[in-house]
Image (cartoon, rainbow, N blue to C red; front, side, top):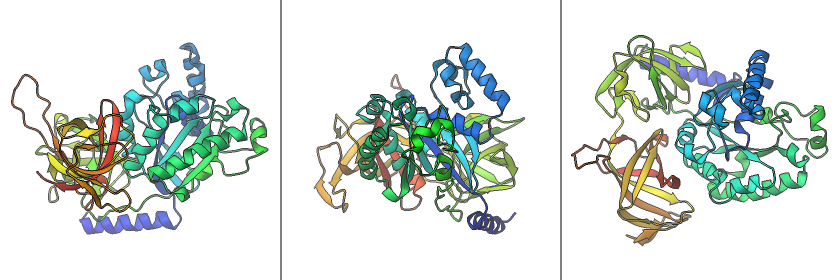
Length: 461
């Protein structure tokens, strides 16, 4: 179909969704390790009829056999043998939920510190976040204090453009449904949410007991008797049902960063990811960047259904032909032949530095995360520290950048070659934040911890 015709059809569909159909929205589930994220989602899938009785019984039996019966709900999402044996989520699990007014793509992210890169990949595909908190005494504190994942996850999702968050205070049954404990947690998290850039009107709190399914889709059950004495607000599903999808930019050229690559059926390859801008249709020829390969779209799948086209905001699986899977790597971007995404090896960024112990200095080795790709880089120039309120320069060419500072710096990708062999540094596909918000966001990590987040101001080369 002609591009204009597809755009017209996409506008109609998006208009119909907004007028009364189910609005599609994607959500990433975040939180400290063992907060009960997978258990909560597994239970919710079952309560909404997405997991049948037979699978539930098989999961109960299987988890009991390996001595992890308390993980039976999590098995609905933690599908790999290693995840099940270790009792932790390691990779992103994707599921579809349906509420009365929303079609929700759920990305269950790992909470463990070792798997933060996977969590970043999941968050970069999400519109909203569901933060799960373990309310048991000591557990909330260890997750929220320095080194815990609660703070880091919130900063990461906000830096990646997520602006709506639901905070599910879980395991309240373990503290006898204590209102005082719920209020205490709420009061500690609220200021941090504001400080991280979440607007109070876009954040909501909810008490839940995931294991028993209390207040996920109903609160009129016997197990919720103690909770009902002090809580009469919405259930989790009714909050999910009110999430607002952000506006989708379908008029800009296609940008599809790859979150996963797998062997396709027959010749070619299959890829998955979220369309950031533009539209894609079956039969279209696309370029993969970096590299000089092209492929043809053989089929597109959205929410487990084959479709002739897909637009910005959709999480898609695409079968490509006429391309060798070797040329597709996670973090590459698919784009139209007549509108290629720029490749950058050196760029200027404005960043906000998190709570770091060791300042950033000129020549510091770091890792730049952009969508699902992480590349080694160097802070080649520290240009200025800025006033966070108005963006004015406080100090030009500072010697170091310390915690809590906003700054402008030049970052240059470096090669990973060893033994002195010359190697070419391949640029990463990115755009200026002013041109494409999602393609212009970066995260900076060092030594296994996220130290800053920012936006791309200028591509130098």
